[in-house]
Image (cartoon, rainbow, N blue to C red):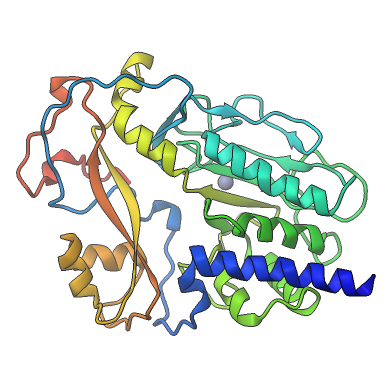
Length: 357
Ligand SMILES: [Zn+2]
């Protein structure tokens, strides 16, 4: 019996390491980046896509596929079309009745992760769900993001059998370490999650549990938790104020983002909503031998200063092999009308409204 518990644990650990190695190879490498300065991540890159990457030919109106989720624009300034609603059931206690829409991928990945926790810890109180996005996205106060169906706020699991219907601030006494760690493991096990915001005080408790009880190697945990460091942009779990009573998960939703690029303008025109014809799409470059920031900038035709800003790097930062550098390319959401087509030269600065972050 003891044997099988140990081997189960080893198997889970192996799967976690494997998935980290496959999907986030950079996490397994030791990092010796220069200390980064902290700014608000959510206000980071959105509005400033690389200059220069634009093409502007008029495209015939595409037909929006029915039922396919479209994540349009950015999480901080975006829209959602054909979102899927997350409703309360055996696993979820969903608080909001209007702001509970996400892309199909967001909902599916969330369901998969929470179902996995429930499989391992059956019969426990449900997870409390805060805001996702509105049916058609857009601003929800007080959030900055939650606009394009890729964000969800989840309450932490608490010890005991009481079912809270709100977010409870975590302490060493009320935190259900095993279940919250299982949730992070489940979220980390795919390549759906871009990052998770958790207050560093909670990260500290979870990290200690994972290391001491679950025997997860420190090197793996370094790739998962920002704690005890500060400002490690490429970890899965990152500190943000206000995330002591819930975690915020940002999903990639690649299909919905791609569909948003393709059909976004047309879909929004049908809904009578305005859309900015341009959007910045994030992508990653994994650092390989010989890379410097200047070379990466040249390769993707972006400004060096933009790369530094998007990644909070300094000019002298020594890049590590396998490190992830986030870049933005500018794409035009398929034009809804001729007036939306932006005619600009290769340095299409004029296509952006200034200060839109
Ligand atoms: Zn949130």
